[in-house]
Length: 225
Ligand SMILES: Nc1ncnc2c1ncn2[C@@H]1O[C@H](COP(=O)(O)OP(=O)(O)O)[C@@H](O)[C@H]1O
Ligand SMILES: [Mg+2]
Image (cartoon, rainbow, N blue to C red; front, side, top):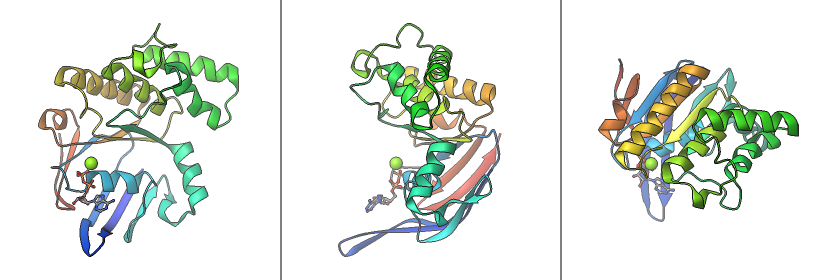
């Protein structure tokens, strides 16, 4: 489903160069529930951003569902992202002026789904993530865990091939974080969506079926359990 080959990425800030990725290669199978784990600064966000076509690499290749995504131009990458990928962020990134319903429905509007189908699919996925009755609330009237549930619904509603989640529980207390992980796992099993999530938290790593450890921009270990 995803092949990552020999990724290298160096950031330059003034006179200093930081090697964020130093030859990362990885194959991700359909339906995996996988964690990219490592301490702060190990390259997790850089790797997810490159796989998610948000950022480019200096060297290497990313192939998703047969498409070599780094060779696409900006517009093609944006279209690829919209059609194939779902994102979940540490800080939820919901649009504050939109309701839960509108935040989720927007993803379908953007890909041209008609209003009736948008309404049905949005209501169904919000129910699945446990937010029935809260569709009309704006993010400010939802708890952190509920906001992350909206973000999960938003990522899943398009039925994307892959969901990339950068430290999805880092802004949640551990109990709420576990609930969010349970929900992600449930969605992974039910929809057979591939989930790749990053974390520096060992409790969170424990939820993954496959654990890839990054250290200083290199893969240190890769275990399935
Ligand atoms: N935009 C940037 N400019 C310069 N250095 C960066 C930038 N983004 C990340 N880095 C550096 O690259 C390394 C990897 O960062 P990152 O991918 O964010 O790691 P993680 O997500 O594991 O904390 C770190 O040393 C970080 O300081
Ligand atoms: Mg990060």
